[in-house]
Image 1 (tube, rainbow, N blue to C red):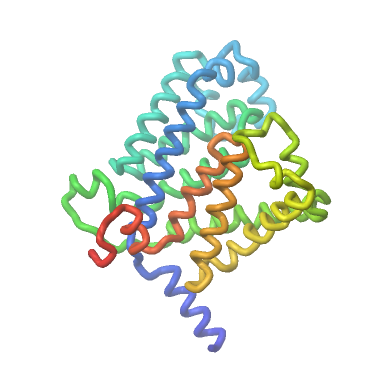
Image 2 (cartoon, rainbow, N blue to C red; image 1 turned 90 degrees about the vertical axis):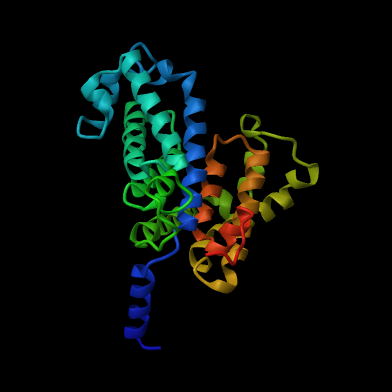
Length: 295
């Protein structure tokens, strides 16, 4: 195969219309994550974001500047404003989940998430950054082309979609795992195999009880290097038919194992939801208990 043929095939893969079912399933799962994220923030809204909280608006402005997307810089951070932004976010997340005006709802979700992030940068982690980036990409993705209220209202059936934003979302997931691998390889604990074992000893991260044999230094090495292997393999092998389900299954086992053993707020479920982007339409139909041969 010549270089020209490779480039042509890549361009076709990047531009040919695709079935919207995997993207629609991701929208639903991601929307649920957004709603749960809001529920976890609700009790401490005043503490983290409002006037009189632990991080004044003036400090936020001096830390990140006034050129970032942050509605609190324009409207203030009174409890009423914070509550309005929060409930707008929750309503938009719910409507995004059911697929009613999904692109507009994704825009509102992104503005709210960016504002909360730039209001208090100290309470968030990389999972929040990933949620924010994916909500931005969903502004441009036709996530309502299937499994949505929008389909019912407009009365159109399943149809192919332009894949540009869909491919961008897939690439973003792969970049996340590739970047995670690169940063892990910079740490001696990951290279010598002690990283997971060290974390297992930190009581603040412990979730449910883990069998004793998994908490030994030897099994710590197995889990540490296994994590590197799975995260490194996914961005390369998920694009090939023979290896796609293997690396998806590997990541699913990894994330569910971390969710069971470690208390990291919604991070693992967020990444699990992103795996839906790499499923085939027939696999999505099986997940939804539908006929895989149906149109």
